[in-house]
Length: 575
Image (cartoon, rainbow, N blue to C red; front, side, top):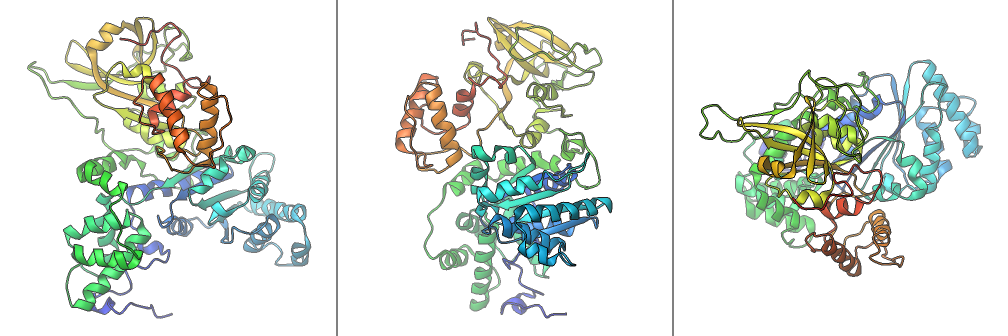
């Protein structure tokens, strides 16, 4: 067995090995909630019948480590072809896949070296059919997939066409940086994008994860969980922005500094000096850091708790076509905030209106005039909202709906203390919490506003109330779903770059007649575009800040025929 190479400070701290090695070692992967969720989505993609699985994230967020962990946990009936060189052409990629799978290990070896793409496809097809006959699945993993040319991506799409009469024969996992999302949003690759059966974007660590991350790795190698002082954590997060690779590099250099000085603990000053050495400059506080400080660690911890329902496991389980395993196994307690009891002698309760009195008549379109909406027994208002967007999922609360939205290709937004008139800006059906005369808070689906009436739907039935009554019972809570444009990940500000979003935005500008010209942006959100967006925001009653965020995008999308609408044509936009 090869001797493990250790840094000079390992014996000083009692480490059996380096705790902050940047090599992708699954044994040192700290299982944050989002890493568990990402792993679950990868496994869910393998449960589906062939197609593409997508794992994206910024440089250093742990994509490769997470991929290796998943591969370590695969059952024995899954073969893997692991491709590292994503700069190759189509023929080279196909030959690499053949080599990794052992195709050509016999008398076909010569054929593989001389075959063109069509010939390689035939050889792969024969191999996949043989593996299928032996009850084996095949997975192709491609690292640094953002470097793939569109031509190579199209060749990979053709690979996913290989099938029997009943079964797709191949899964392809693309692992890459966010630029991969921009590439897949290109119109010529829309067929491939539609074949992505599971996707996850890996985010950096939250500050609430950082201490556990450090202690986990230190304890894994035999160290003590007090090496980093509490005050050093904020400094480390400020300079690393939560990116695991930078956390490791700075932490490793900080431990070297402690060792060199004969100290016992990492301090903010040591972290700052280590960061300057690693990064080569004195970094300024970033927006991410300022945002984290403003929000506070308590809010971050609450988000982590609310996301705890993403724990789910198992490659062998089968699920309905539109239902991820996660939705079957969410077991977290309901953390919906409960109101403070008033002077009434009976406590206030909050329920989702679910009951056996439901009718069975069929779900109506959200664009129809108010009428009784279809419901099945024991279905929740949250699942009814998902159904308006074409998805049958067994969610029971706004929280679970938001957890499931990403797997459906949608985004979820929840608001508290929202003004009732803001509903007219969004023009989307959503979940509302309304009070009753009996001190009870109930979650309804607000499906439609027609004239001066609002349509409320729950499993107990369907009712119309006046807008004045809606305002009287309004609690300020509203949860909606919306469709993000291709490639959208976060609000865009002047100077940001996103090719797919710029293409979408210029189309919107023409649609809304803000400009008649086709804009040339160079994939940048330029000052000229910002001014046009401000013009649109002002005309739509939005804050004219020029930021391309959620409210602006939802408003721009409101002309789309496929989006469920809240308002009917004769609603005047005022409560």
